[in-house]
Amino acid sequence: MDDALSDLYQSIILSHNRRPRNEREMEPCSGKAEGYNPMCGDKVTVFVNEVGGRLDDVSFVGEGCAISRASASIMTERLKGLGEEEARARIAEVYALLTSEEEPEPDLERQGELAALIGVRRFPARIKCATLAWHALEDALDGKASG
Amino acid sequence: MPAPLDLTAVRRDFPILSREVNGKPLAYLDNAATTQKPASVIDAVSDFYREENANVHRGVHYLSMVATDLYDHARARVAKAIRAGDGGQAIFVRGTTEAINLVAATFGRAAVGQGDAVLITAMEHHANLVPWQRLCAERGAELLVAPVTDGGDLRMAEFERLVADPRVKIAAFAEVSNALGTRNDVVALCRAARAHGVATVVDGAQGVAHGIADVAAAGCDFYAFSGHKVFAPDGIGVLWGRRELLAAMEPYQVGGGIIERVTFTETRYQPPPVRFEAGTPNISGAIGLAAAFDYLDGIGWEAIRAHESALAEQAAAQIGAIPGARVIGQPAHRCGVVSFVLDGVHPHDIGTVLDSEGIAIRAGNHCAQPLLERLGVGSTARASFAFYNSFEEVERLTAAVRKAAAFFG
Image (cartoon, rainbow over the protein chains, first blue to last red):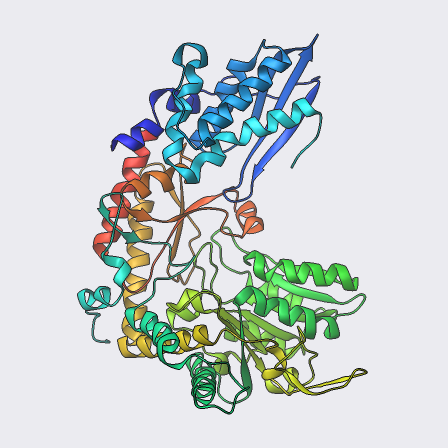
């Protein structure tokens, strides 16, 4: 396997794809939103339950490629328990990690498995797969149902 | 038996085929999306701009006459390529999508009224579905859908039953399914429609490149295709229509170039085909399209069909034999396309693994979402072949699919 390909599908991504965390519907929840990528047909629904300004629970269901499922899975793990402001900052960090012009230096200690997503940068066709769940989460926090 | 293709020579005709992608020789297996262009087509377009460029049907000067001659020649050339005879005319449009929209917006609006129906099939590309869906919604008509079998073949008896419904005014169907490669019997479909006075629109987007278009034999009323899928430039396509139907149709777009007489109170339009080509047309595209058909005739259609068919059959057999892989669609007549899924591996990921091997395929719903839903898959990986592909490329494809299965397994 070439280096770029193994960077893209490093073990963190493969592991989350095989056994996604928090892949379940959530009822009741304080917000949910759908993300859809018409190019490849990937779809995800993200659920969030905010209690006292904190993300008490985050989950997702959907169909998609390894990148989109792993990204959603990592997202639910990393954002659970954060305050809303902190969660929004983390979302912005992920967008920057994937789409900023200059490749950022991932902060492994703070970002943990999120840093694994940086491998997607070299595959421009796949960036939308990685951001899909994050956009849906943002919509769920905004309280708008998106399609 | 036709003389076999000289594949080495054919591949040399297509400059892009000698390039590398991701450090590997390009294996271009996305021909149902768009085809590569031979040097003769690229040269025809570039020579036109270098030597002959002028607007058509407008000037008295030398170059305008040359450009007009080339454009008119191209029109005759494409009609010959789809064996249209002289019962109709070829209109240059941007592609299949625009052709079908043109028919729906002009002929369709006049033919379909409140309480009528339009019949399509379950295997249509969105381009041959959405324009009819919209027309039906606008007219208060119903869109009927002829079903397909689990193997992806049209249920002919169901089509015949539906087309006999007196509400049906138009039947629109693909010559070849872009998602599965199913080849429909357009002769039989048109015959069934004609028996009930139903107008026929054939989406030939996936048919023309395989040399199966035969408008006269089909006896269809409209036939649509895109240049870029037949080794010609993008932005050029053809709507062929039966003469008497075209003559009764309103223009699709209006403006310059299609006018007999204009006053501030009224306008008289020119007869077809010019009536449907408002504005400056895609002149270089039409010339490139004619050059593509000249090139293909030179290769020989029988040899092209035999080679492509062998490639697709071999790919379907080899991929179908990979553990965990399943070929979607087992049509009675396969035309150039093999759609497949792999257990536990999303088509998008298959596409990325194949890309790292220099192999270009398509992953997704292929603009045929209702069909894939009917067959119980959200998306597929699709390899689609042209006559310049080789058996070695089929082997590379199979090996790369095995690699994807192992990697994600």
